[in-house]
Image (cartoon, rainbow, N blue to C red; front, side, top):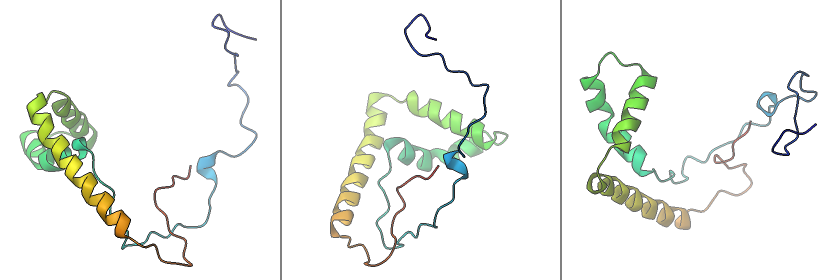
Length: 118
C-alpha cells in the first residue's frame, strides 16, 4: 500500500534475507604509509586545538559529552573567530592537493583507505 504522500509503505517485520553489508568481510585493505594525509576541516582544526583546554575546564565530561560541548562551542563562534579556523582548513587543503599531485602510488599493490566497507 501507499501512505497519504504516495510513498510505499514497507513493513519492517520480516528479517533481511541477505546478510547486511557490515557482516561481509573482504580482503584487508593495505594503506600506503607514504600517502599524504587527508586535509582537515575547520571544525577538526578547532577540535584538535581546543580539546585539551575544554578537557581541563570540564574534567568530569565523558568523551561523548566533550564532543557535544566542542561542537556547540564551534557553532557559537563569531564570523571572525570562525574565519581563523576556515583559513587553517584552506591552508591544509592546499597542502593536501599539492602533496597528492606529487604522490605516486606504488604499483602491483592494493592501495586504498578512502573506501568505506559496510
